[in-house]
Image 1 (cartoon, helix red, strand yellow):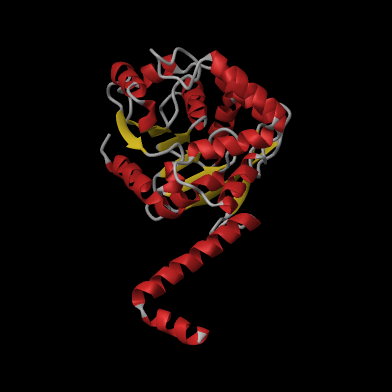
Image 2 (tube, one colour):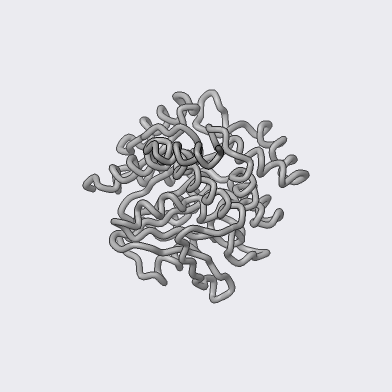
Length: 307
């Protein structure tokens, strides 16, 4: 009887499509759990006088786009963008030092050093007219890069859901929170790294993610050592890139992808200080993962706009 029912389901094209989709989803989640990266063609490149090896994936041809992950995140979070953009662009994702599969180092765990590493990656891959896409704290790497090397080799910049500074007056500024807000989160990070990672994953996703996928994301974050996570957290906490961002305005195309939950603070600040920038609303901090199709369409539309 079970076989008869199965055959009747297969004959229905819509149910067959559903089963195929469900099967593909199960396989994909299993591969995430096992740490298998679909279509990944990872390589390593040395920076910092050969002291550090950066893991990166480089696929496609055309204008180069580099995706920069956020705090303790990895290149694998951008797997859905790589599969999409490699068709028409040279799509590059990488793990910053002490993240993912890159070398773990006791020194240089600041966004300034990340910017220097990024520059060496760009130079060694002989990239020109580069598009940089920073997610969360990956935006700090972009700001530090611009401070050090200027805009000469850049085509446009995309900032995913990140203010130019973390700490300030939430009533009058575009910031994540006050210092009092961060005092508790910093203590939690020091005392319970795993719990902090789980909390971060839940915060950055709008949809209910299955436990296997959530566990995969947490494990990706935990590939960054605890002391490095604290170092980068503190670096972000005390940094203010407001003036850097203001000085970029009008010099090349800028796109901010921002959550609705910022309310008016982000949109007001950008309108006043970076008036030439374009703003697109996104549903969550990690919408590029949750709703990749929509995210990719928004990003691709911006990439096709003329300078």
